[in-house]
Length: 540
Image (cartoon, rainbow, N blue to C red; front, side, top):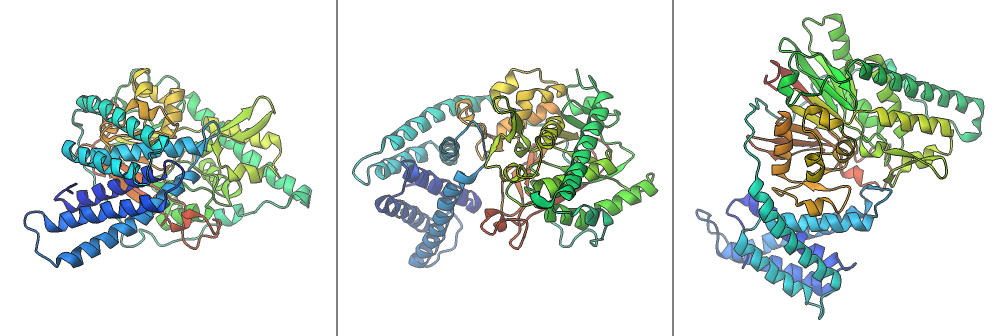
């Protein structure tokens, strides 16, 4: 019988993985029938019963039947959540070249792989035994189920070899604490900047007024593009031969190609406001700016730069789609802020800013599907404006290095890409590296095998892989977005060597910027304030 860990948190993770593992095999042939569901619920009850009858050392004796019913009911609820998670995978963003079916199949394989890793070798054998019962519960095993079982076994063999290349411990100090505030750090203020920009686009038949509004937006796009290119011109070649962030000490802030670099001055205090995915939720960006007091802090710094903290605003990308105000809300405000304070605002590119020019039709389109923003904007925007946005997105950096913290939209590049580029800091500008850092996601596994990474553009990476990548840069922390997480903030990986934080800033139960049926309404949108002083290894 499968035995859960004595650690209750690990036991819950194992149970969640087990449920996802079994649900995946139930759905992999396209549907879950009643016999398969009954089998899964029976396995859950057996595992719970074994845990209650063989409690960890030191556990208090409690009513057996009551405990079994309690925990079985709890995990039945988890089963419903997992079923919903599998179904929601069908709405995840994919590239134009990839199908949702391929993404879902790959993500299911990865979650199965992660579930397997949480058990020891003997437990894995028992898990496969229970899987055999599920495959044949309705009289025959579907070819898709048998194929997934073989692929999983092949991946486990590959992972066993990969784990032998575990990363060495990171030696860089991490004087960092993380906490959720009990109250807002600043009283929300008002600013004329917002009201001046809050102009919904007129209807297409409104004639001259629509043209004036679009001309203003095009001017903002060209201003942003020009500022980025000016800053880039002064830094060309600055990062070649710089292997770790330690080599950047004493350098001024710079933008080389598609990488922001901000080496912290040991004599300066910093306050960074970090905002994750916004997805057309203009109200969330406005709220984050007001509640964090970013504009007030910017005014204070400009009035007294020797004593006030240096404020920075970091936007992690994904300004478009899902919500109503991508182009005429989130992007309009982001560009205006950058124009007002280009030395204080860092715009990063997300995967939803992957636009391309179709050479056959001459039409600008999004490489992400679904892409609600460009589909709606096309009805009023001329081709020249859409192409200006495409060029702007090509100019947007995909990462920021601040001390030993790496900010990016998605994650790290795949193993094969890392091995095929020079590994100095300038290598982060490699086009494939930049693309994959917009699309990848962290996994609960130690290592995601290369074969599994190659299956989808939105691949996973494990703890050892993240640790090795950050260590090569001299970093210990990654702050990223890309994944919808309902709490809005999650420390996905956190130990003495490594910290990975996911931040999601779109959502809200009563957010009128979102469609009524949006799953983002279950998200509690969060932003992040980082206070830092003391240079590279100062207190954060």
